[in-house]
Length: 67
Image (cartoon, rainbow, N blue to C red; front, top):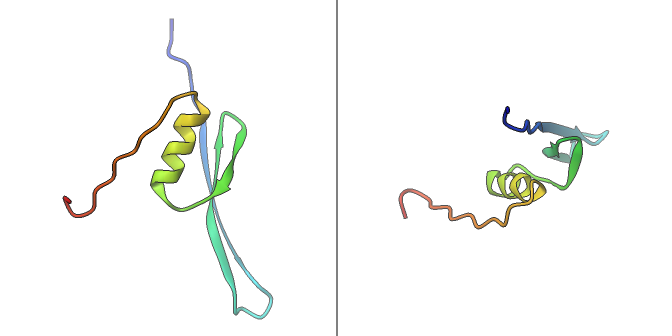
């Protein structure tokens, strides 16, 4: 029996207002056709959202520069 397939889509966007003074950007994450309720560039948030959408309880421990 094969492993279940998970489809993760990362849709990056960038919008600029008409006069060019404002820029909004981010990444929309879609897991198996379900769009997660946040738009973010932060890998921690995206990873946590994907795993929770798959039914996992998630704790992410991130370090910076080996801290």
